[in-house]
Length: 382
Image 1 (cartoon, rainbow, N blue to C red):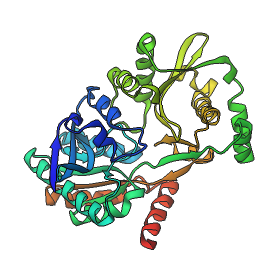
Image 2 (tube, rainbow, N blue to C red):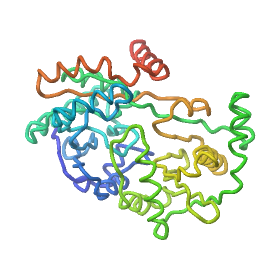
Image 3 (cartoon, one colour):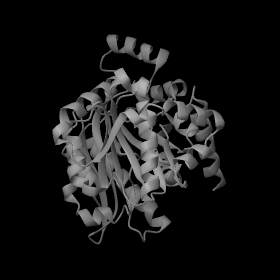
C-alpha cells in the first residue's frame, strides 16, 4: 500500500480516477477544470493510495489561508472583526483540507470491490499522508470540508482517531422529481407555498430563458452578475473566475449548461448546472439585484430546473448548499455535511474547541440542529 500526493490531478489517469467515483458529475474533468481556473489563494493537492500499482482510493484536497470568521454571522461576526483589527493574523490560519472549495461534498472514492475493512485501511493511509504533508508544508490546521453523512461512520472512526472534531456544515438539498408536469409539482407543495409560488411566477413570462454550453459572447455580463451575487453572499469562501465558468463548460461538454435569463434582451441572471440522465446539479448562480425581487429570479430558476428535469426524465434535482429553509419549503430533503478540523498546535486547538461551542452553525438554526441530531441518531443505531 503506497500513498501518492500530487499537485495536479494529471498525476492520476482520467479513467482510474473516475472508476473510484462512478456516476459522479464532479469527476476528473471537473476537477481538472477547477485546478486550471486560477482561484486566488488556493493550492490544490490530491491524495491517492495504490496497492500493487493500482489506484484503490483517492480524494482531492486544497491548502488556503483560512479565515476563521468565514461562517460567522451577526454578533459573532462583529466580535471577530474587532479581534481581527487588533490581532490581524490570529483569525487567518494556513489550512490543509480534504475536499474542494467548489465541490458539493468531500469526494472520497474507493475501488468498487473494496471491502469495508479495506476502506478503513485506505482512509487511514490517506490521513497519514495528510499529516505528513501538513508537517512538511508547515500547515497550521488540518480539515475535512463537507464530509458527507453517507460516509459518516468511515470518517468518524478515522478522524476521531487523529484528534479531529466535527462541526455541522451547510447541508445538501435534493428534490426527488417524480412529477408528470409542473402543475403536479406545485400540487405536491403545501397550500401556502403553492399560492406563494404562483404569485412569484406571474412575471416569469417576461423572461427569455436559454440553455447553452458556451458563454463567449456574454462572459462580461456573466462575471458582472456573479460578482454582484458574491458581494451580497452571507458566507464567502472561494471567489470564482471566468476561467472556472468557461473551463467547466468546455471540459464537461454535454454534461454542463449555463442557463441564461434575459429581460428585454438584457442578461439579468444565469445558472451554471451539471447534469446527466440521473441528476441535475445546480452549481453557481448570479443575478441582477435591481430586478431580482420584482421578477423573483431565484424561484423562476428553481422552477425552470424542475421543468427541465421533468422534460428529460431526470429523477433528482440537487440544489446544493445554502437557503435550506426555502428548499425544504419547496419539497427538498436535506443531507448533513460535516467539517472536521484540528489545529496542529495543542494550545490553540484547545482554544478552538471552546470557541466552537458558541460558533456552531446549528446553534441558532433549528433545521440544522434537527439534522445534526438525526445524523447522530442514525449513526448510533447503525
